[in-house]
Amino acid sequence: MVKEIYRALLTAVIMLFTIPCGAQPKMRELFQRMPAEMLPYLTENSKLDFIDFLDSGMKAEVRNELGGKSEMLSLTDMSADIQVSPSMRITMHLMPVNEAVDSCNQVVCLISTYGKDSPESKVEVYSVQWKPLDVAAHLSLPQEPYIATFKFDTTVGLSLSKSTALNPVAYEEQKEELPWLKYIEWKP
Image (cartoon, rainbow, N blue to C red):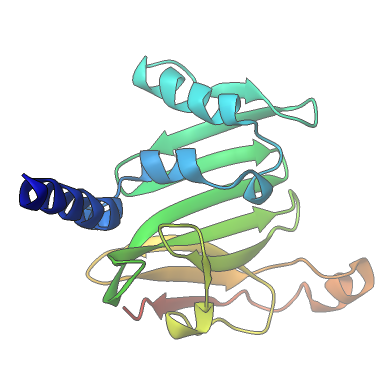
C-alpha cells in the first residue's frame, strides 16, 4: 500500500514537470498565461474575451486599459497577432529550439511593433514559462531601426525592412535612400 502511494505520488510529480511541454504547448494557453506586466493594456478577462470571441467566429475586439480598442487579429496553435492600439502591434510565434528550455523544444518569439507613420520593431524571445531569453542566441539583429515580420517559406526566420523611425530632420535628409530588406534565419 505504501509502495502504491509512493508510486502514484512519484508519477504525479513527474507528470507535473513534463505536462508544460509533454504535449507541445499551444499559443492559446501561452497567451492566457502571459504575465500581465508584458501586456498591461489588457486585463486577464480581456485576454479570455479575445479567445472566446474568436472561438465564436466574432470579431475579437475589447476595450483596453487606456480606454481604446484592442483586437486579436488571429490565433492559431503556433501564433497570435494582436493590434493593441493603432500604434502598437504584437505578433508571437512558437519557434523550435535544439536544446530544451523549461523542458520544452519550443520558445516564444515576440515582435512588438510601435508607431503608426514610422513604425519600428523590437524582437524578444521567451521560454514557454515566459522567462526572458537571449535573442542573440537565435537571431542576429541589426543595429539600425527595423520593422520585423515572421517569414515561413522553406526556412523559418524573420524578414526585416528598414524603419523610417528617425527624428524629422534626419528623416528628411535620408528619405531618398532605398529601403533594405533582410532575411534573418532562426537558429534553433
